[in-house]
Amino acid sequence: MFFAAFPLRRCKDMLVLMQLSAAMFGGLLMTRLAKQLKLPAVTAYLVMGVLLGPFCLGRLGVVFRTPEEVAGLDLISQVALGFIAFTIGNEFRLEQLKHMGRQAITVGILQAVVTTVIVDISLVALHFIFPQVISVSSAITLGAIAAATAPAATLMVVRQYKANGPMTKLLLLVVAIDDAVGLVLFAASFGVANALESGVISLTSVLVEPVLEIVLSLALGSLAGIVLHVMEKYFHSGSKRLCLSISCVLFTVGVSMAEFELGGIHIGFSLLLVCMMAGTVFCNICDFSESLMEHIDDWTAPLFVLFFVISGAELDLKILSNPLVLLIGAVYIVFRSAGKIFGAYSSCALTKCSESITKYLGITLLPQAGVSLGMALTAQQLQDGATIRSVVLFSVLVYELVGPALTKHALMAAGEIQVEGRTDARRRNKPVIPVHLGGH
Image (cartoon, rainbow, N blue to C red; front, top):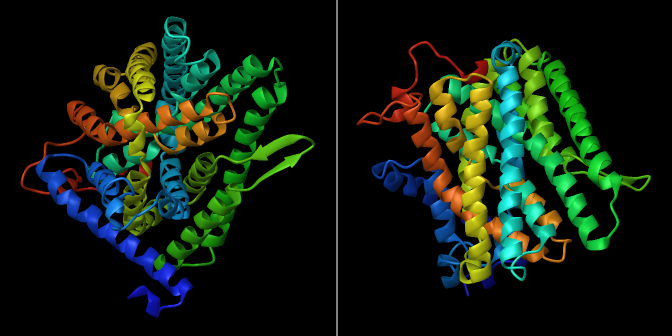
């Protein structure tokens, strides 16, 4: 009766605004409980998202009633990922790369490859033990998806607790590199999986398209960073420069969504790589990027709250009723975790990182979300594509709820987060003289 008094369009707009309000307010309320349990705020947002989602309170007609309503807010998630990537890109400052560049590249590549190999071996072994459970093509595809690490949860933990130190700096660099490595590994593995099922291998999809996607993404991001720097010179107030930066990131996110075919070759962009590169170029050529990034961090705080609550609402709890998915998912999670930890440990030891970094870095690389879900969506073309997507959804459910707390624990064990007391951790860990990660 209440909604009948409004035009249909107005009802929809009102519903969306009420959903966003409930999501943000609910997420903030949940952080009070999370603080008592000494859990990161990002975990509180994700849990509240699950509670407000279509598989919990949504069944009672509260907030997000259907998966389609959650999917309708995907644009907010894309924009948030763009700003997250832009922020991480600011860690790639030249002075930082001179000291940690070789270590970051080596660790970023090796831990991803080791994870893929370990998950491949474990799932292929599962195939030979139970052939009806999973195919070889699905096994190697899941192995490549396992390489991906979600930057969003990691960044939120670092920002909340003002984590600072060698491991934090290396972590942010490795997480950024991980996206590019994951794209290449997935493209190659998916091409092989397609060949196993069809008997025909396409060098275009295995080699040309992923390399082209990375190159074009880096080029587009570089152009965006240069344009932002040039335009910022025409404005002098902090508020106008902030507005210009936001508009530039929004435009970059929009362009990075473009997809088309040229000469039979599928051309697309990686949103994360584009925005990371934009942030990297901008921070290295702009002499006032540090102060500007502080303003952007403040502006994006509520956007990130919405992003994680919506991410929690997207988690599909129906998959928990499928024993097959739980079996494959359990194997996937155990061996992916082992791969990340062992891969990071061995590569850190190889590059002579400190003992604390070598011991704890792998734990911080466990979160998995957006990038892996995108890969799983592509993998649905395979015969067991639905199973792959369900397994990835299950792993995301586990990693997103547990990963942030493990990241916090690892950073505390490495001595880069102070123990929380009565004072807010965000204040206690902030130095008297501001020292920003990678200079931002």
